[in-house]
Length: 317
Ligand code: CP
Image 1 (cartoon, helix red, strand yellow):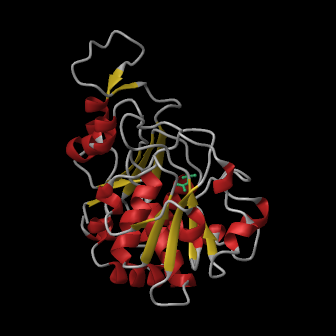
Image 2 (cartoon, rainbow, N blue to C red; image 1 turned 135 degrees about the vertical axis):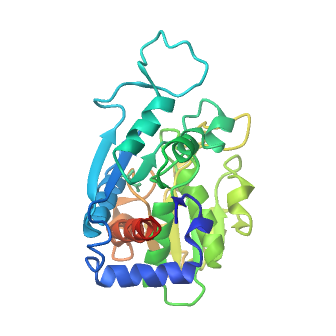
């Protein structure tokens, strides 16, 4: 595997989950695979889980790891071609990327949607430049439109906790004070559809996601109806995708917060969230602290999803 961004890059999902379980059972079995290989993790945006879990996964595989926070200590980067660089950005991404490629064997990139231009975001302008100019395998640590390491970890977690072959998985929008990207729900929809679950998405009108990702899911605008019989409730906020409201907060309606009463509508569902989560906006203290909440094992599986991806990339070098 040279690149990892879409669910299609990982191939057969059952095989990927089987491999994840093997890695989880013995995460140091491939310690020699990454010997003398260097992972460069590039963050244009903040992170706790992705940073720690991906570094841990790389160390499990025997890799060396370099972490670069582009906005802290590196030169400010110009990303637009044709700009007269007489402002506050002394380096262009088009030199920076191949230079970064000189110092490593594999590159992970985190670059969120900027909400300046929908087309640039959905064409993955930053991530694709790393693919084109780094000369290295590149994997997504959350791009403008997707967060596949999270979705793979979510899939592993659902497979571990499900009690029926084809669970009802409900992705529900929940309120948040700031405009968040669509990357997590886009990816989650893509992976849940590919897994063949009974997959439902619920959100207020105006929060429709791109059909590129949701195709195959049931869309239900009534949250209570969507939650009825759910085996897994995956809460997440996202901003509007459709024009002319792209990247905007249209609602902070707290009646969409996941509460004990909402969870009572479900089939004793497990509660999931990718974290970080704003308590009592997205989900109440009671729900996230309940024994049905699996947000911590879900986060722990980020190490496993990252390790499977890195292992496959190393095997292809
Ligand atoms: N879920 C997730 O990607 O967490 P971080 O933003 O902390 O990496």
